[in-house]
Every structure is written in structure tokens, then in C-alpha cells.
Length: 117
Image (cartoon, rainbow, N blue to C red; front, side):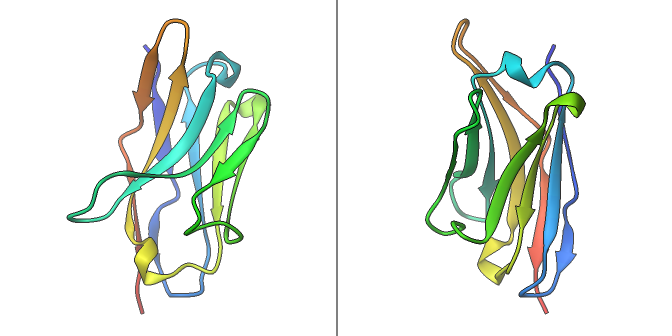
């Protein structure tokens, strides 16, 4: 059973930075896509950033230029570096991994990010 374990959330002031980590229990090249989603209170879960097996990355318009997704293949870990944080970035952040054959969708337990002065 695949496990995704997130860490790195917390409370930060506006303009600050945080780095989230997502450690997978297996080889991350097993997955076709890995990414980060977030869900704020009263809102739907939304995609923040994703990386394909081939290394292509994509970001939502709201975080483009501020967040950077990267991975460490040796550690089976993906990271989300978040800079210039804004109060509207406050949410629970979830790591996600997907396979196509067979179709599987895995989620971490979530980590809280709060941006507040």
C-alpha cells in the first residue's frame, strides 16, 4: 500500500516562506504524476502544482512565480517551496500521486499552512 507522508506546514507571517515535503513509501517513478493540492475552509480542493514522471512541472496561476515544486529521486520525496506567502495561501496542503495503469489516486494526510500576522 502506497503511503504519502507530508511535513513542513506551520504558521508563517505574510511574505514568509515554508517548504513542504512529501515522502513516498516507494519509488516515486512508479507514479505518472505527483502534485500538491490545497483546501481552504469552505472551498473546494484545488491543484497547486504538479510534476510528471518526465519532470515537467505546472502551477496554478495563483502561485506561479512564488512556489516551486522539486523532487529528490534518491529520497523518494517531492518538495513544495513556498515563497512570498499570502494570507490567501492559508489551507490544508495535500500531497497526491497518480498512476495510469492501473488507475490509482493516492493522498497524504494533509499539512496545515497558516499565513497570518
